Amino acid sequence: MEKPAEQRPNILYVDDIENNLILFEVLFKDHFNVSIADSGKKALELMREKEFAVLISDQSMPEMSGTELMEIVKTEFPDMMRFILTAYTDYKTVVDSINKGEIYGFFNKPFDSEAVKMSLNKAIEVYNLRISNKKMIKELARVNSELLDLDKSKTRYLNIITNEIRSPINKIMSAVHMLKDRIGSNDLSELLFYLDTSVSRLESFSFAANQLARLNEENNAPIELKDVSLRELTELCVLENKNLLDKFLINVDFKEQNQDVVVKGENDLLMACLTTLLMNSLKHTEKNGNILLHFEESSEFKCLEIIDDGSFYSSHQIDNMMNFFSGDQKSDDFTPGIELILAKQIMISHGGRIIIAQNEDKKVSTQMMFPC
Image (cartoon, rainbow, N blue to C red; front, top):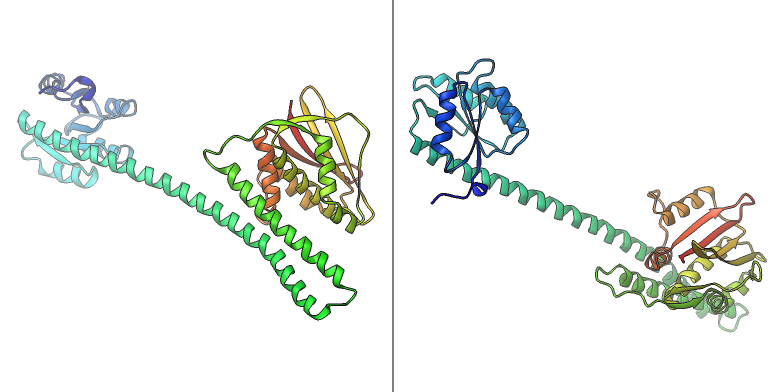
């Protein structure tokens, strides 16, 4: 049964004799999509424009012999099935073509059209199998690469998790051992504070891990967008972290008595983000220092800004933080911590971003930027 033209495989026949080209096309046009070329040079031009499953070339041609053509095709189009057409007694040509052009087979002149058709059909099966295998290998390589990337990502997060959880657990254990020896001493309140902050750290970490997994799920539910007052959010955040702020004698104040700014977002997520950024500023503020909060709204953005004195930042740390939140490549030795990773993801999920910058007076500005 004759196949539709679009389903027929493409084959290319090369011969410098015009009558041979016409005869070949007539004999096989109902079975294959036949293209013809009267020289090796023309054949290469066609092969660079169109994909062929099979190449059949006469051996005796001026300028470029069939064997020379096969040698080029072997390098440029290795999957193409290659046949040489030669005289009965020209066995040296066949051997050269096998060695140099790695041909699949050869036809003797004059050829038997039925035998040629049968050989071409077998060659096309091999060609299709080659292409199928290459596609499969390529797909497997792609999947494997994705799995490797996923494994690297998992490993990175596991390392972060391990590092994050080890510190508070060690603090708790140390504090417990010290409590056994110091019950009734003046250090009891200090140790209890130590325990309380470590347990809070673990709770914070647990929340961060849970929310990060939620926001990174492939088919995660959209966040609940409601009106959130940035002033109320910051006042509540300061109140909930008052013990730590008082412990390190940090004063938090509003930069100026400007009007409130309202954004669309999920309150608990924004509270987690703000708490992380506020605690990060606390770590970089000296005792008896000040942290300023500032709201700003324009036609293009809404902003909650945290300004600390930047006392304990190195220029390397500032660069790493700026690069992390901007999405640029960061150094291999920088691990932001799971809360900062979550803070960045929270702002992304709200269509916003976090910007960190250092002013000329060395103060550090951390901005939660929201779209209008």
